[in-house]
Image (cartoon, rainbow, N blue to C red; front, side, top):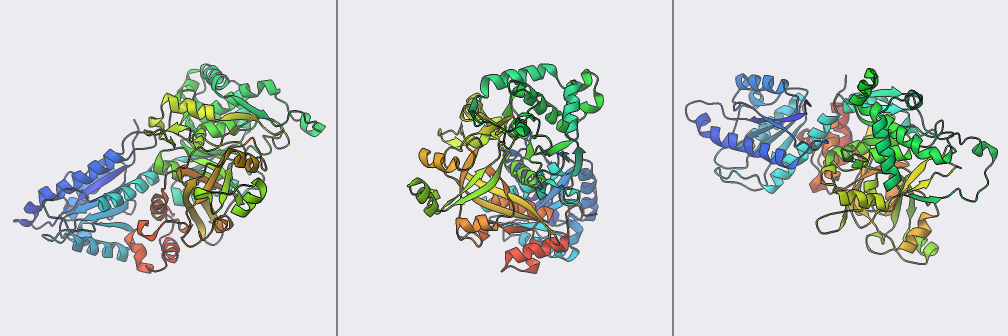
Length: 595
């Protein structure tokens, strides 16, 4: 039985007996029930289960009540609390003072009882004691008998709940680091203290030879292997072979130790084994491998690949792409934030994106800025629509989730990306049909393999995310909301083939206008790494809220000021320069799980 991270709902009340408390009991509980229903009916965990809230057994009028509720919550994995009240309450006597929970208070905006006064007093108390807490207060006055949740209040409650549940799902889980440093990419040189202190996660280290051991000793489900291989051969059509007609030197030809016609067999086993390393598989215990059956308690991972593996063995592109997709040979299933080149920081960006949306994260190189002038010079055509100010070429060296093709369709028949539980058989087939698998370029991947290849269809709202580590500062985030841009087929072909025509491509136009986003070139120039991860939807506000919970400052974003929602304590260090206030308060508070 899964013990899910929960949000505890704390109905907080004026504790004066003899008329005051009694008159508020019903209203306070109605607020709590409404908040509980809002969260549970709108949000889901990564496995598709509706998010669970735990409602306190009583209203909280003082520490006697608060202590009982604390014990209730402590037994049931409550990672965050939402206190609700329509009235004045006794400040620190009723506040959630558990240092391990993420906190918010919704104070009813009414005139009969001063819920807003309690909200302000509680936020003052939290700031004085050093506890970050989110302040939720409706824009318009409500009547006391109005039990609806205003739209602006609902938006903030859900922003808080999404971030808290994302943080809760990471806590106690593992990042599985398969291999080591890839091609000197700093993000693949894992910093364990980042995962431990900021995300509450452990890092598990697995050498790539473990995959070969399990192949040699047949530590995998043979029946599922046959099923996966048959599915691959039926649905994973092969694309162009970029090696055809080339003559390679002996250093390359000698390095291809798996015959080309056996690549898919090797890759199918590799994919099963990587999944089992992360999550375990009870079938392995049935064939005598009990330790391997337990897995590594993973929520994310990455595979080094280049070059100690790919210089002689088929690459990991298929495994990386399929693990991050919403489906495989068994049908729809939860996605895994699994990073190419074991870029642990991009895996974190993938993880944030998928936990906040439950959709597939797309790993990409932020490869090229194409100005309108350069496109006109190279193709003879002008960029139009959202692409008119220039575009970024997001392309991965062979491994991106198939959902990135945007071949799934919404109710109106338009391109989209979906949660796995909404993926239909037609959606899955469409994504497979939109993707071909090109034989890996032997000049890059001497051991062969196949790369997922597609172009993103349609104009979709997406959010590009990157986590960076800066010495002396720590982690920081970059967020760019924008749109995918379908280009004219000939323009796409000309631009795409200047890089590598066997890799998956997305043309991206960030929204401009905010500081740092004056031009598309500026976005490319400010981006902190060669990698980024995007997810469907404009979720920059959600990422900022989650980052504030983890105490990770945001160094670059294009989210309008009115959409930013951070704990009230951040206002204590300034309201004019929000970026400086963010960095300062994250520094003062320190990592969420600092030791």
